[in-house]
Length: 166
Image (tube, rainbow, N blue to C red; front, side, top):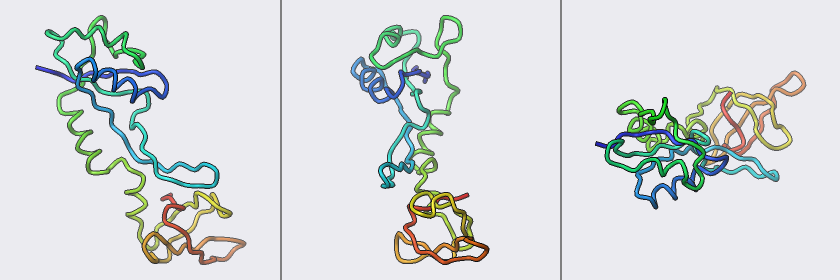
């Protein structure tokens, strides 16, 4: 019976390690989440590893030649206790997989769950880092935020992707 184990990858090499492990016949799981990235004044939703530098690999400890994992491209180490790999508790990987499929780890989910009256922080633009309160949800993808500037609340329309919950 196959169990799940944890692989520690080289920096930014989770996907590479996963691909090479699959080529060797291992089943892998690299949980991912969607996060906002700001670069060159553009804000976009990107998919990133949920646990940077870690991924899960499944194999039968008794029947599989698992020591090849140590020399796999992109792999730094296999998490072990003594000489044997440390097994992930039963059901943990399945629970993470179900939560990932439901989008529970995605930053976009929290933005979509904002309601009038919620406190938000402006992430980009001239009002970056200011905290405000949502007055109303405008047209799809837009929100009206009351920003506290110079002792008064100034209404401002902006993209939903430009704010994040406090």
